[in-house]
Image (cartoon, rainbow, N blue to C red; front, side, top):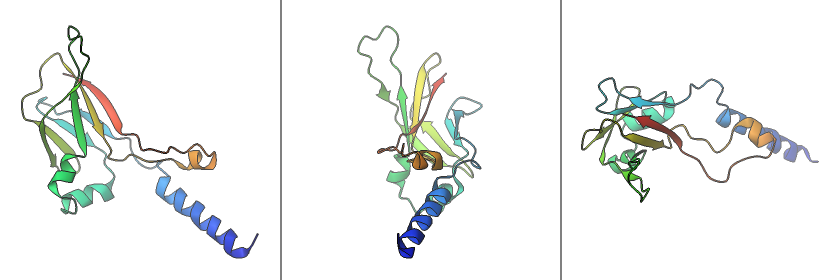
Length: 143
């Protein structure tokens, strides 16, 4: 194997290690605010949060970062999860989803976000178990 090829492989491995190492990052925290009027997403990667705060993403892209779905009632036979209309706002270190209508007590809400999502971690790359699509972070909240 040539020296150039060896250095290329080492460089690629180092880039993957730096880009995919998540051991120092806290897991994404998704929960209702204290008054249950909004959903707060914390522990967002600082680089991504800076892009949002600095206006590098236009408003329509910021709105696409968080999706909230309302779970159907047990009596609803269609089983369709309906999207909750609302606005995504950037806080100092978090994203806040404010619904257009208040969350209903006794309902389940599924929150989906691609913030902090990764294609693979270092161990998956080494073991050749990388994903071909990016899965969103998700959490079901009970109001």
